[in-house]
Image (cartoon, rainbow, N blue to C red; front, side, top):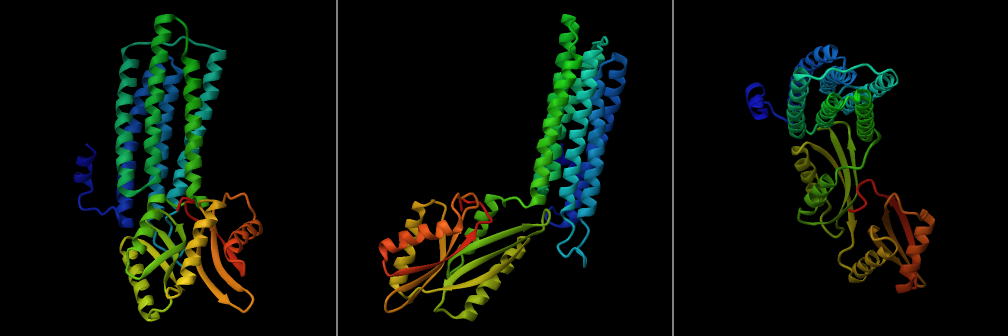
Length: 390
C-alpha cells in the first residue's frame, strides 16, 4: 500500500532534493495525522463507555501522536528553508529539533499515563469488557502495525530520523494496545482488575521509549560520530583515484539530512606535478558534490623516492599498534643530521585512549628509538573525529 500511495501522490518527486524530501515528510505526516485522529476518536468512545482508564489513555496517546505528526510537519517545512546570511549552512537541523519535540511529547504522555494509572490502582473502578473493546484494540494494533511499516519505509527513502522515530513509536503503540487488550481480557475472566496495573506498565514503557527517542534526537544536534558506512564510502572513493597514496584527518559535519560537509587530507607523491595533484583533488571534490556531499580536500605531499623513509614509515605504522591497534600515523618525513635524525609525523589517537598526549608521545618515541637509536621524534597528536575502527 505504501508503494501505491507514493505512486499516486508523490509520482516523480525526487527524494534527494530538499523540496522532494519536504513533500515526502509532509505527506507521511498527513497520513499519520488522519490515522491517529480516527484511532483516538474510536478508542475514546469505547474507553469512556467501558470505563477503562488504560483504553482512554491509549486514546490520548494517539492524540499525542497526532500532535507529534503536526510538529514533524512543521519541522519538515522549516528544514526546507534555503540558506541565508545568518544560516549559511541552511536550516536542516530544524528536522532534528522536530524529532526532539516529538520525543519530549512521547515522554510527557508516558509520565501522565503512569500518574493516572497509579491513581486508579489506589481508587479502582470497574472496567467493562466486550466486543467493542476487542474490535477497537485489534483495529488499533493493525493500523499501528501498518503505520510502523509506512513510516519506516518513508524514513528510509529520505533518510529521515523524524520518520524513523515515528515508526518506532508506532511499534510501541502496537505493544501497548496488546497489553491493554490482554489486561482487559484477564480482568473480565478472573474478576481481578488489572486496568490500573496495565496502564502503569504501558505508561512506563512509553516513558522508556520517549527517553530513548530524546537521546536519539539529541545525538545529531551534539555532533555524533558519522555513520561508519559513510566513512568507509568516503575513504574507499578517495583511495580509488590514481595517484592517491592515503587519506586521513577526515571530518564530517552534519547540518541536517542532505546537508553534510566533509574535509580530509589526501597523501600524494611530493615529487609529482603539484598542479596535476591539485586538479585531481578538485575532480574528487566535484565527484562528491554530485552525491550531495560538499567535500574539501587538503594536499599532503609525501616522499616516495626514498626507500629508507618508506621502510621507516611502514615499520613505525605497524609497531605503534603495540600501544593500541587503532593508532595510525601519517605525513612522516625525516631531517637527517650528523648526530641524529629528526623524525616528524602525525599520530591519530582514538578519543577513548587512556594515555595523555605526552604519555603517548613518550611511548611512541621509545618504540621508534628501539629500532632507530639516532631518531628524535617530533610527533603531532591528532584526535580522531570518525569511528575509531577506521
